[in-house]
Length: 360
Image 1: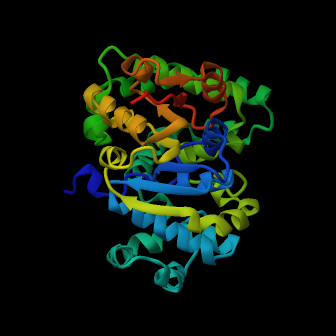
Image 2 (image 1 turned 180 degrees about the vertical axis):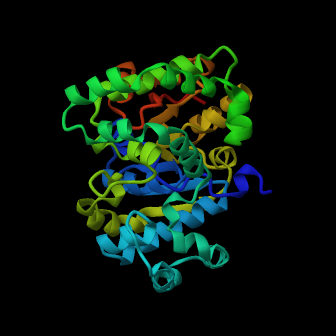
Image 3 (image 1 turned 60 degrees about the vertical axis):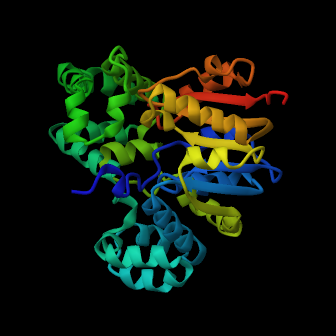
């Protein structure tokens, strides 16, 4: 069996790009370092009009996925793009791939030829996390009628009533309590990040609270992430930003601003002093102990220009980097609270920071 990171781990957008764009407030003067993940993040950040994005990931498979998405965006019209990636039905994905393969690196082309069946199924839902979501959907199947009612709600009042009266009962609370058992994450989801969740972190209360929040504040029908998480895929009327028709021309025009770098984040940061004005680093803390976390943040400070902007997410592992590096990390607590409230990928809290360089 392949180890966790010898697979594509993330293939669909699992973060809300409007939060990154608000936190980073990009301009053509910005040089951005962005963790690739599913490839959604660097594509979405192009909408902020940065001058250059270095999209970094130590897992080459994630980079091959980004290459393929970029190739598809560069050549396909919107309906064909959605069909090829897997949002809508398509019977000719492989022949479409063959019209794109000349845009891929030799390594990416070979990878996708070896993974032809994945291309034919649609690459958008091929990641390990997307497979975990399918397990979640299977578990929720007996409550499909109520779930459908939540997604069909036309207003928040109706949605809240369904959530309170028909969904949030002992079955829901009991099911979420299973997420507090580390063996569920370790053996059912095969998620290595669970080892870094502190034993005293209230996982169950956190998950229940975040679901309550999203049920009370956002219409589920319009939320791309909830459609992915609970219904198995995106709806054409609730797509991530980089897959929306109105954004396609802008992203296509700016694709050349993305530079793909396959390297560990820590190594790259320490070898590129005073290089970046903005960092989109996702929730790297989910796979880091305290020592590793501090080393990566030391690297961010090393690679940052004065007053560089950082958008970091926290899921189940939370740190306070400003305590490790006093005076060098200025967080915006007001913005962090606003993003945690608005974020449609509602599990995350934020570190929105500016960097103050130490005098040498």
